Image 1 (cartoon, rainbow, N blue to C red):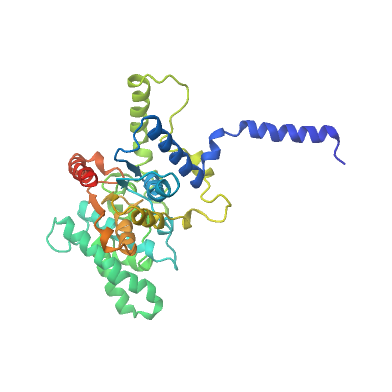
Image 2 (cartoon, rainbow, N blue to C red):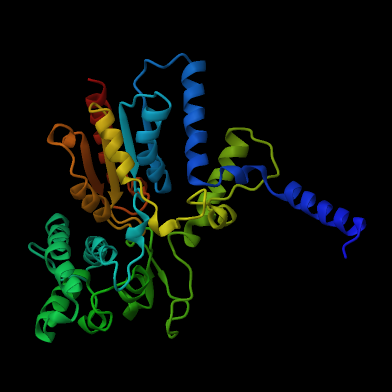
Length: 367
């Protein structure tokens, strides 16, 4: 039988846990996160007296997911009309990230990015004129939708000869051995592609930018055990830059660490308040569709890097084709992609092209 002392110790332990729990954890969930943004924007507009100004929102990666959600939430719940929404390398439907024997779409939305990376490293059998990226990626897009999806969906009903022909086309487009494509039955994971494309050189390509390569530290091991050259490989560069900017330029004095990727937050993030849904089932495209119909004047711009394997550009293209937008507002949606990876704007040419595009986008949105 527990004593009063035991009860007090248990209560103290509980209070101690609550005290140690960071206050910001209450914001580590989808709806609270969105509400915090909505509340901030609403207060900013009021304090700065800018309610009648053109309002744009922009977000990158998971921030693109936020923008798609906010396109509806800001207008429906906060009374904030938007002139435009910009989604940069967005993750809009998490179900597209996890392919298996039954979820087929993920496998095909990766193919154009594989093809672009293979062409960049001169490993692809060019579709059309050698060096023409647009022709090659367009061929990969058509192959993904019109050839590979039917094969994967048909299962064992395709003959071995029919499968062999498709696998050879696949291998030519993405620069991998046909034997590897056959072994994986046309389901090539980004980790497999990243390691196998340049295996003969003992190099891997980056997941966030497949144009970047690094030496494979364990080339003889069955599974890749190294780091991603576009995440861990560049972390020290970005960490040094942001910490220098905060302290030397902005004069921020703090002993707190700036995390480019906070794994504690990532692991603790709640994708549904009731715990009924997990990351693989969260999506934002329906919210974007509603936001666009609520405001038929809002312009939407979605952009990706061609070599990004984490949030592949063809996922957004594919989703846009499934949105069933009314012809009156379909022209409000622009999809434009550039050479580069997840942060394609680090490429000088891509950044300059995008800058010019965005100038035109903003002008169109306020005209």
